[in-house]
Length: 215
Image 1: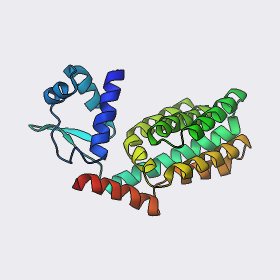
Image 2 (image 1 turned 90 degrees about the vertical axis):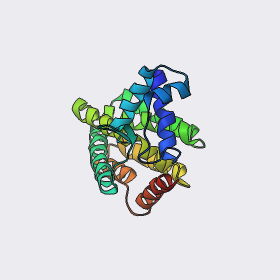
Image 3 (image 1 turned 120 degrees about the horizontal axis):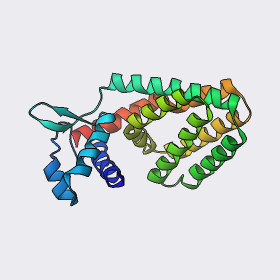
Image 4 (image 1 turned 135 degrees about the vertical axis):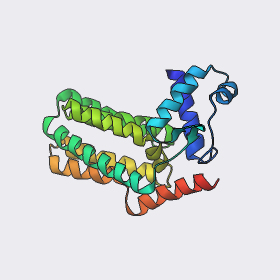
């Protein structure tokens, strides 16, 4: 599974960065030969990529590079923003001592990784996962994790936008401040704003996707 995860990350990078163009066919045999592995981890990596919508399987064409339409991407981010807001609201109300300790540690880990996009992305995932868990609503946390994983490639792309890392870290600090203070309304609003792709941030994201398409 770890090998499949590494392969997914590599192929995902190539799609997001435009080295694999929209419509390109991803042949399992060729990929297995290229990476020196069996077809099993390649197949698993492609299944993981299909969850995020970066690839799709078409009759007679096999697996090809794909991407959601901009309006669908907006809808997914809007939904993610509302789900995360709900998690933050409940976390502020229900935070346990263990949640507090874990959240503070996750924030410190994000700060320590703020000069490296990929490391920060990994710590960012942990940070958000802890907020979902701190909601103490297992079903809500499950839905949040599922959509977070589906949007993962695009959230990674956002972090590459100039000055986004320090901005993201500042937003994390403000979110933690509200949750620790038990201010559920502020925690919800700060998480909603943190996630929602709109205005210049959405333009930057779409610009990156179009640059990938044109490469």
